Length: 294
View 1 (cartoon, rainbow, N blue to C red):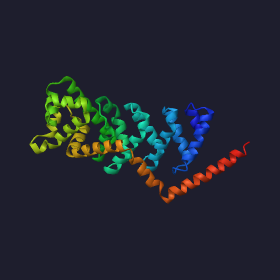
View 2: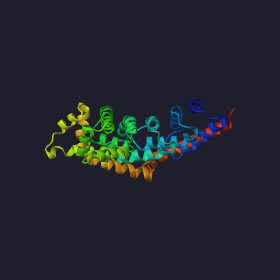
View 3: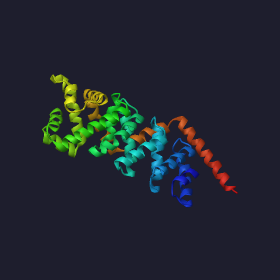
View 4: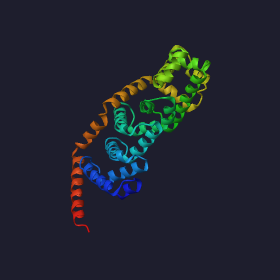
């Protein structure tokens, strides 16, 4: 708890209450008090407000138990994602459910989704995308890596944003590929950027069937980078992944149950129950020690 005191502005009374809460949490989640306190300490470093510390800690510890991320990795990545996108602190549980559900239903892992989503956060926020993690899942599920994909998609989003702002031939070409008029595409981009992006990428996937060269079309639009071209062609051939990811993410956000359900499955194992029993025994030893101090 000393680490928590270093990174937060909790009073002595609040620290004592936090210590009790962490001990109690260790009997409900198969993580030691030291592991849980380390997440709370990290939360303080990341600027999580003290009234949200315990909820944030519980959610990140659940993610560490239910996914292939550690609790510390989840805390750092999701706090940064929230800071970039301006997500409210009471939505961390919903975001966790989205990540878990996407990881369960697509050929990717939770850590890959979060790594890609964090790289897409800034450009996605500026473009008005609300389903950033869904886009991250679709991209990582077709083998696109976070570093290359993040840069390539950022360039693509910027190019579309520029075309919509300036109008003219580039906007007309983006709209044609998406199966819309320039006015329709511009309106879609401003009101539901993800649907406009999905339509554009879906249109790219059909160009070869229609006798057009995807490579030449991308060159005409100035989307000539190797990473960018490869990413768009891969997504174009699996455009249904984007639609499916968006639907999955929206449902998971609304229901807000996927993380809890996944974690409960882990907590029900014999190993988890033994860990929680050991934690309870350690809490008893601490209580006895406290009673005899000094």
